[in-house]
Image (tube, rainbow, N blue to C red; front, side, top):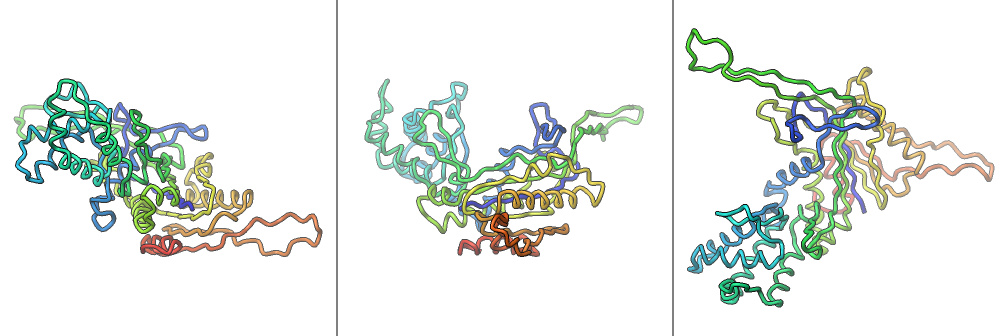
Length: 396
C-alpha cells in the first residue's frame, strides 16, 4: 500500500534553501530555469516538525549526530551510579569504536564520529544500558593498549542498532557504509520541490546605518547584496506503508501515527533559512493525497511546459495544470491500482467526471479505463488527514 502526497505552494520573495554561494538553489527542468528546494531540506523541516510531542513522543524519534560517544556518556552520568565523568567518556568511546565507524581526528575536546549517524533515541538509550550492564568488562578492555571488546559484546552492540521504534528513522532510512548490516531501507521518498514556472535570480542591495555615527559622517555602516526569488512550487512525496510497518517491527498503530505525522509535517513544515529577513510563511494552496495498492506516479511533468500565470495567476494555473495532467495519466494508464483520491484547495479544483457513455456494441470496442473508487474534496487540512487515515482504519 502506498500513500502519495502532491502540493502546490507559492512563496513570497525568500531564500529558503541556499547553495554553497548563498544563492537560492535552482535547476533546469523542461528546458527552463526553475527554483528548487532540495529534498534534504524538506525532510529536515519535517523531522523538526515531529518534535511536537502530540505527534511523535521523544522515545519514538531520532537524532542525527556525530556526538554519539558524548551523548551515551551523559546518559551514564545522569543515571547517577557514582561513576566519574572521565570513566563514562572512556567507556562510551570504547563502545562507539566497536561499531567500526571511527572518530574524526580533528575532534579533540569532544570525540566526534567520522560520519554523521542517524539513530533512534531508543537505540541510544539501549547503548547506554549495554554500558551499564557490561561496565567492568568495558572498563578493563579500554585500559588495554590494543584492547577490543569481545565478539559477544560487539554482537549485542549491533543488536541495539538493528531494531528501533523511531518513526522518522523508519520513514527516512539510514545508510552506514562502514557496516551495511545496520542500514535501514527508507519507507518514504521525497522529491525536490520545483517551481511550476520559469525563475530568474533577483538581488537585494541593502545598507545599514551606524546608530552611533556622528552627524558629519556620511555613508552606510555596512552594505551588501543577497540573492532571492519568489516561486510557486510543485511538491511530491510518497510512503510505502508496508515498508514503514516492517521497519517499525510490525507495529501497525505506530506506523499509522508515523504516516499521519509525515503527511501533516509535509503540509505544514516550512524551511527556516532567511526567515527572519523574509517571513515567507506561506502554506500550500493545494494538497492532494492518493492511496494506491501499487505503482507510483509523480506529477512533476505537468510543469515540463512552464506555467505563465497569465490566465488566473500562478497558483490557480498551477493547480489547473496538475489536475489536467492527472486526468491524462488516468486515461493512459487507468486507475485500477488507486483506492482513493482526497484533496483540499484554496483554488477551484475540477476532476473530469468518469465517462459513463455506453461502449459500442462492437466486440472490438476499446475498454474504458478503470475509474477511481472514491474521489473526495474536503474543506480543511484536518478533514483531509482524517479522510486519508480513516481509509486505513487508523488514527484520526
